[in-house]
Image (cartoon, rainbow, N blue to C red; front, side, top):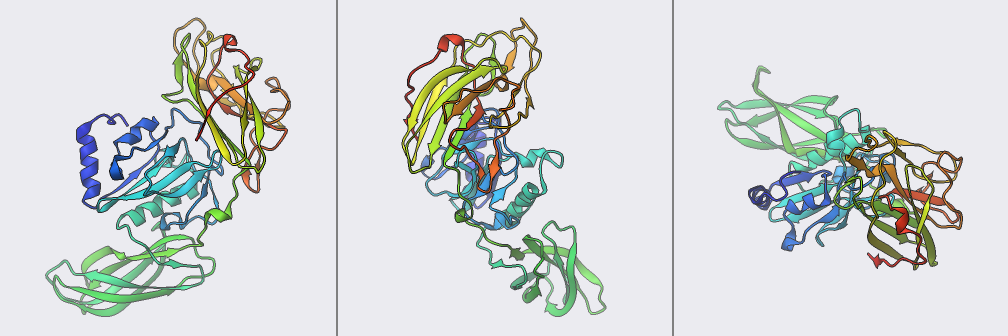
Length: 431
């Protein structure tokens, strides 16, 4: 964000929301950037930004609680560019989306003063049309439609008849005798219906008008809009098309957290402070393992650099129904020997590499941590060498991405030097 320490900026946000404004906040470079946001009782938001986490797209999040902003979603799994998550949010928050990989919040909202704050780790606002999907754009679209005037909007199922009371305002010094109503699609790129009805609205006056429409069973999901245009007796426009907050109609199939069941094992590895580190310096990374199963489990952790030989880091026990966390520092990063690197997520199958940061041999330049890999094994099998047939992207089952017994999953982490060698046990914190 770049303004996290600017007190004038922070005070401006606080004043805006307290007076009734709505903030829509998307993924930031660092989790600490979210500390600039106003929160009830001064409780800071804790999490990780796009320079600290590993981004996901397909089925990156799931719906925890339905909201009008999620009206477009027909599935519990949401495909969106999400990079980051939150592990500490205000107690007044309502979590809308959670990350599939670790079950932690990816989108939440809370009231502040007379306004609202909506926080997300999605960067679909930046991705445009080449780095985002239609589902993610629809969420942003409906989020803005709701944020114009935050309130509980009635839900209408496809095939139902929706009815609203339109608040009509005449802003010109001429009386109107007719109103032309236009129902627009959620994206406002199609006219669904038009009708002209008699209605007397005095100059600079107001009136209400009932509106009803029966949506087909195949209707697009989202927030529709009813706009109006004022006409005189001859049908001449005296006031051009205007919108009204009362003209928002939500067509949705509400989803809840019960629509999706997280996997028995959830994991994530982040680099607090950032992924770019200098050759010869230490890298900091944080592990989080959640055991949702009914039995205790043990995990073995490894690291490797540029798909080199895997080094055993330690073994941890995670009791049933708990999460284990630890922040650790690596030894000195070795010199770069190649111009670029890649990382992959391991599972039984094939390997899918990703482009990584690069540097030149012998040059003291930043080495992106994507060239290093930290892995977690639930079985006794050691990580397979790079390029073998046992490396691939984490599989997605009917319940999403999950780690199964005797299978190897991994997340990007920081490099640990050989001097940081194998340990018999590794203590962490539950969170």
